[in-house]
Amino acid sequence: MGTDLSKLIRAINRVGIQNISLLSRMTGMPIETIRYTVKKRFPNIGLKVSLTLNHQTIGLERYFAVLRFGDAVGGSVPTMMKALSKGAFLTYWSKAAFDPRVIALFSVPVSVAAAFGTFMDRLANEGVLSQYHMTRLDWTRHPELDGRYYEFSSGTWKVDWAKIGSQAEEPPAPVKEDEPPATPDIDAVDVLIIKEMELDAWRNLAEIARKLAINERTARWHYSKHLSSIANSNYVHWFPATPAEVSKAIGAVYEFQTVTKAQVAKLRLLFNNFPFSWFEAGAKEAYYQVHLAMPAGEFMESSRFLSTRLPEIVKRWETYPLDIATERSFTIPYEHFDQKKGWIFDQDKALKAVLPEGVTIKG
Image (tube, rainbow, N blue to C red; front, side):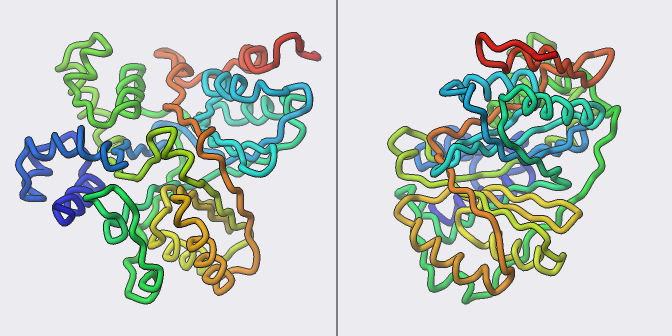
């Protein structure tokens, strides 16, 4: 069964989850078996199918941010991060494990990127942020789950660390550095369909049409016209689903600045063949980062492995241990898309929503 699941995971990573008949032909598995496996068996063994979305194609550029909040914020960080997700393009955040910093990802329309930068500066001026820095990401990608190290029968990791790096490894998939258009070829229905696909990658277009109260034929037209090249694939990843599992997992972000293209290539080869990588990103200006989610029982071996291998490639890097229990993800900022105007952003409205209760805008 493990071989069949590995084959199914590879197929889903390549062609997505919408065409079950195609997955059946690629894997030799019956259609009903695939449905049962994805909807029932995957969650039971700690696996999840998520949408692979090309943010740039729909006019969004992504930012990695490290935030430190001011004293006035107090314990309202989760509330403020939720406000940022609604009003200012936040799509992911997690608290750092050992200090008060917050790690975040934003998906910002390129047409309002300058206004978003001003907004972040205003948060600092208002004392909401005591310190922050952001890095524009030119490409992002989700490395594939490596079935060699995952025991599907029990839903646990079984990593033979002696074998990692001692055998020929597959090179990482190439990445595209697309420049996001200021006026992407999408409309409000497209954005809502993408949002629903992000919420639950398994749902088909008929279910999404019912949720949005639109005709199924209309939904299929929008998908084939605008979305088939934007949201046409998925990725399978391990996730700590229950509170008990979250307590047994450790997150980390490794960030590499001032690295050469050759070093980035070596780092990508290392982390794309590292069992616990789930997200990687880079920028044109000598930059690379990778996000990890590690079972607690594998944390020390993972740390030893990376602390041995990384100095062979680079001299320095930044590590952000994460408290996965605080981690939250959000869909694309669909609230900011207007049928007539496209992507929009109201700085003052967002600032009022984010400021702690009783704090007023300075001016």
